[in-house]
Amino acid sequence: MPGILGIKLRIERENLGLTQENLAKAVGLSSEFISQLELGKRMPSLGSLKSIAEFLRKDVSYFIRERETAFEILVGQKTIDTRAKSQLKKFKKYCDDYLKLEEAVGRRLELAPAYSHISPDRLAIEERRRLGLGDSPIRNIFLLVELNGLRVYRQALSEECKISGIFIYFEIKEAAFALINRNLSVGEQVFVAAHEYYHYLKDRYTDPIIDNPDVFMEEYVSLYHPREKFAQIFARRFLMPPTKIKAIIEKDLRSNRLDFEDVVYLKRYFGVSTLAMIQALRELEYIDYAQYKEFQSLDDVAYEKTLFGKSTGVESVPKGKILPSDRFKSLAVLVSTAQKKV
Image (cartoon, rainbow, N blue to C red; front, side):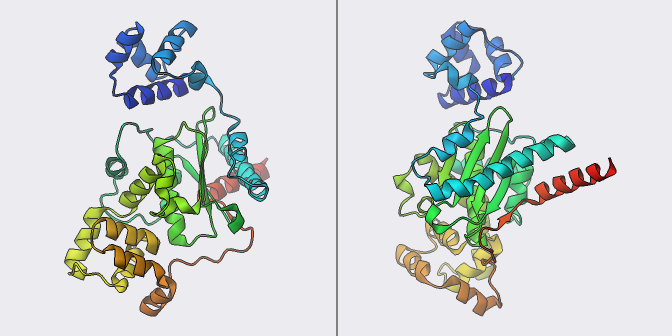
C-alpha cells in the first residue's frame, strides 16, 4: 500500500506542476517526509493524509482504496453488453491464471515507470530512449510491452462487442493487462497494443479503459476523452518515428509524392496497419486529405499480395480462439514440469 500511495501522490503533485517543497509547504509537512511518502518508505497519519488529499482535491480513498474490483468496474460500464460480458469472463480467467503462474514460479514482472505531465510526443521519444530502440521498427510489440509489465491477451471477440482493446490495472497486485481483439488484422493489433501501452504508462490509476473501433479513427477520436487522442499520437510516434519515416522517403523512395505502393511498402516496414500508416503520412504532410481518403478506400490486402506475393496483415482466427502470450505459455510449462517432478 505505501508504494501505491506514493506513486499516486507523485503523479497528482506533478500534474499540478508542484515540487515536493511546494506541496510540503502547502500542507504543513517537511519536504523530506513528502519524499519518503513518494518513495513508499513511509505511511502518513490519517491527519496528514487528509491534509494532502484536501489540497490535491482528492478523496482520501483515492490514495488507499483497493482495486480488486477492477473487473466489476469493467463489466459495469454502459458500453459493455451481455454478449461482451460473457466473452470477458475468459479475459478475467486469463488474468487470474497468469498471476497464479507468476506466483508459483516466483517471476513477477516489474512495472515500467508511470509518467505524468508529459506530452504524448515526448513520451514516445523518452520511452524509445529508455528501451534502447533508437528509431528502428519494433518487430514484436506484444513481447516488448509484456516484458515491460503490460501482460497481453489476444482473444477473438465478436463484432457486436465493438471492442478493439481494453486496459486494466490491479493496484494491490501491481499488475497490468491488455486485451487485444484478434479479429483485427495483425497491423491493427500492433497499433492497439501500442495504444494500450500508452494507457499503461500514463493512465494506470484510472478505471479500466475500453477502446472501441471509433477511437482509432481520426474522424471520431475527438468525441472521446482527450487521453484517447494522446494515446493515438503516442502509438504513431512510438511505432513509426517521424525521423525514420522521413529518412526512408528521402533516401529510398526519393519523392515527396507518394503512391499507394509506397504506403504499402512503408506499412510493411513498420509492421503497422495501412490506416495507421496513412494517418502518420498525412500528419507529416506527405499526403493530403484527398489522398488520405482515396487510400482509405483501396483494398490494401489485394495490393500487398500483388506487390509482394503475400499480405502481412491477415491472421487466421478460429471462432472464439484465444492466444496466450509466449511468456504465459513459458510459465505454464515451468509449472507443469515442476509438478511432474513432485
